[in-house]
Length: 260
Image 1 (cartoon, rainbow, N blue to C red):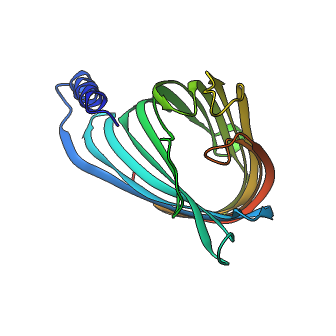
Image 2 (image 1 turned 30 degrees about the vertical axis):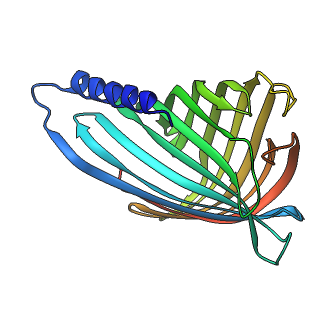
């Protein structure tokens, strides 16, 4: 991530904090932390695509009234069986900083997101990474007493090495279908549209990723466990060659989130 971009981001977060200050608001340092773990099995599997795992965490570093300045990061590991039964083939790093405002059930979230993709224990000459500057919005609803979350984002790259990404538009939804005590069944969907300025080394056009998911969620205050099944269509599965896959996933998630 370029130093200039980092300084710009810090200045933006500082400006958002100043704008969020009201006479009655008191600053709160490190008001919340989060942790997330996920593991899923692909179906069908391929030599380099058996499992996907994600581990990460974050923190709200500053809270002022309804405003939060935050940082978050995670690493996604793709596991296959090229050289051994359990062989990590990719490691993809995600880093993000930004701010959140909560306004009567609507959360606005300007963000700066960095992704760096790497082959594990294999040669990789070109850099494969990008920076995205954008804005998200998310609303929490309760139609018919069912907890529902809908949201989306729009962003543009400030840097894109090899991948050629330009604009990104996303949307997602999560609805509670059944509920009893602290256990619920849920359904979810997400989509991601990306425009491309293709690099000659990675020729392809604009694409749409999407996924649908259903599962069981166990909610205990700030701790959540999910067992899920999903069906997804995903582009740029491999780092250095174009290609898409449509497949199932079966997995679990563990979430710790202290955000209020």
